[in-house]
Length: 281
Image (cartoon, rainbow, N blue to C red; front, side, top):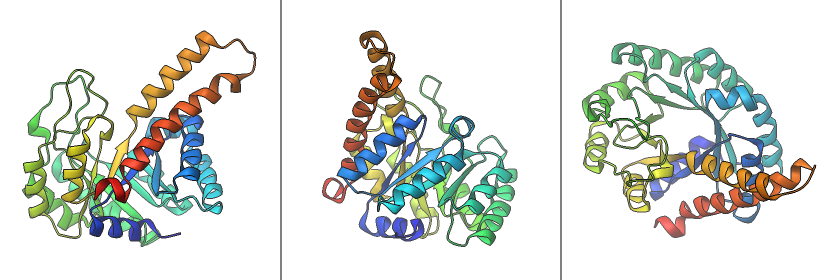
């Protein structure tokens, strides 16, 4: 299978991106596998720190390895990791990428820690992709603070000093889905960041669930190659599970969960096809 490093380079040259799905439950992973059998398009599966405690990254690694044996183009990432030791253990295990979230640190500390981490990760596996983040990405329902958005000059210094592969930009994107008003990216800011940083640097866009197709396409044109999708799946899973609990009369747990997987598969099919070359070009 093509390495993630090669895949991201190819996507960038074609102005395409890969969706990254968080695995909040096993049902989500089952749905992704089902979708990929019908639409074998590359995707990333990933865990946040909380999801790692529940699922355990080592278990996801084995499932992804099994899917790869079947020819499914699944890549592995640890999302929003704040424990460098844990992240490096996953690099040793064979994860394709890891994300070091330093948004809770001051800028100077973030630069130093990211630089050291990238060196350590690449010494273990030169092909591993390292994503880093030094700006806070706001949550839906909190006050949006433009002062936390990525500064182009800082992004340039950060990229040149740390040699990170991917930078998680903060440009008005939000974690979660705003049901009252659509989110709007500051694409002018993204363009300024693109002009300031090395041409080799690629971007990640967090909060992909709440973004319009137009903003996603415009962001990809500026070097976004990975878009995170989590809340859409969580909301669908919760909605479907509550429906089945209230309507299904069975002692068999799979009778409740199988329709949930069906509903999740529909969402994931839509997301995979949204990122296909036919729909982005």
